[in-house]
Image (tube, rainbow, N blue to C red; front, side, top):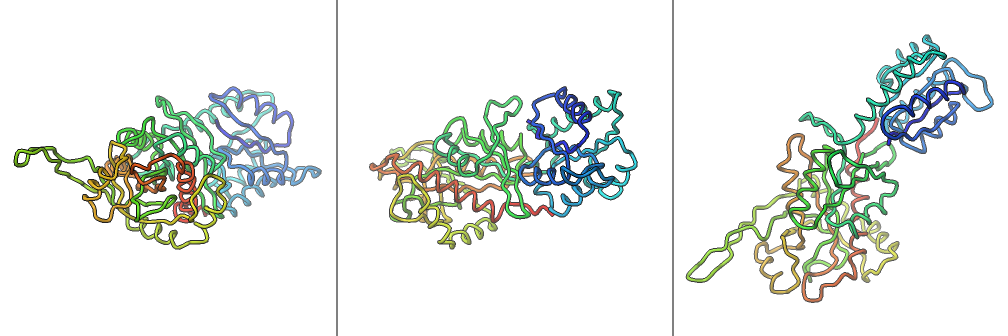
Length: 410
């Protein structure tokens, strides 16, 4: 779906422009503004992929067109930064002189100009081709060039429910999109905060566990070329070291099942090989900063209407072990604890997501895994707090992204 804003006050030109867009490939969401004031209002309310702009526009609904009306829209966009700026701006004008002036002043904003001659269909064909080209460029899979990121953040979850559903509810307004030749369902949108913004994609693995998460992360990396890959969701915590709802930023993470089984003095023994993946030091510092914001963490707990514990969550940075099996016994957990004396959490995906990012082709995304404790992986394991933990993890991701992952847009 390509979202398009047409800023034009001539009814005949509007009709012919809409007809050309309808003939283009794919689906399109076309909105129309007939003056400068309404154009600004539409651009504030929605991020458009394409702006089709005439320069000879009235400034208000009851005013007459002025030769530089459209220039006011461009100046406004330039002053506001790229938070509200469409990725593509195309001029459609019957007044060549007006748009020559616009190009000289805003050459860095205007992608191309289409000269309109009402009664001739050549300009409509040019517009249709332009929309087709833009559509191909904004729809994933994107082509990698070894240097450019195409998406700011890819969020990967292991489960559609409650993990993916918690992210979608927390962020709101994400659009479901399909990626050619990929059966996974992706959701795309943006996080905006003042003059900063981040493009965002979210996907759930087709199956839980190390393999499912690695495949989901790898497919997302190749299709979307994200700057960061962030895994949210739920985990078992270590009793006495964590509480229900606490969020663990994984550092380090490893596969607790990696190693060798061999006979030692006539007995079979498992010899672990816990090759670790570490969290970048900048992310460690940021997570610790966020952990100090007790007001934010208390707000998460207070506003939650789900079944929840009596304590507000805390944020920890610490060891998280990943494995291919669900652990539901104290003895099994103790065997994993022997691999790292400071272990805080045990789950099934973190290591593979971090490995997928650090082994990806360039430009490599930076991985972050932050999961909330839903149980303690012992005989008392139950699903009572899974939705709460997924909710907390999603809210922590949203706040972390707003503070640290958004790119400056001006």
